[in-house]
Length: 276
Image (tube, rainbow, N blue to C red; front, side):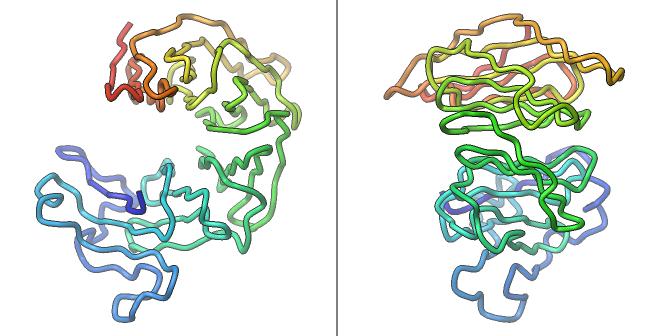
């Protein structure tokens, strides 16, 4: 849809970057607190009473439908992707100031996914054929990756920051070593249909991919501190708990932040938790 709902966690402390901010006070949005929003602007507004009762603090309305969001590790910024948004396909939102803006004057192709680098001020932007890594501090292109995929669907950055995982609709799972090459270090073709989502575990040496073949593949992926040693990738398990619905399988996956638990959401309407 065209709205992102922001809900502070219940019973959990807010990130340090936004802890002192008055999150429920009116914000500036793009047009300013007292001005009318310009055409095409992102609008921050308070949700309905029903959504507020469920803990939703803000609605962020987009001109085009947003398909995904990605949080910065410090918690004060998030990026949203609206593939049909042209020059405003990628928007950055600051939670503490409730402001939104586009980091790019124009888009170099249809944007499919974005991810923040966990340690540097970099934003990874995946279009259909390439991944571009931008330095937001210097506002320059840092690196362009060439996966040789026909249509990229998803990406995930390793918590160490030196490796990147990419999934594609042509069934490719690509592992990039950012210090090694602009081409994939390893390309896996273990799924029989399109890959919809990929994800590194935030703490453990695990990663996973989800596909329209209704399966989730789990791998061991160890990155060594020794720069002379390449990453070790070992297939671990194939999880089959979903059913194919309308030619779609597993749409998204997410790891638990500390445990080796994996959540998966399927087109069959179910959300599953795998614990071992």
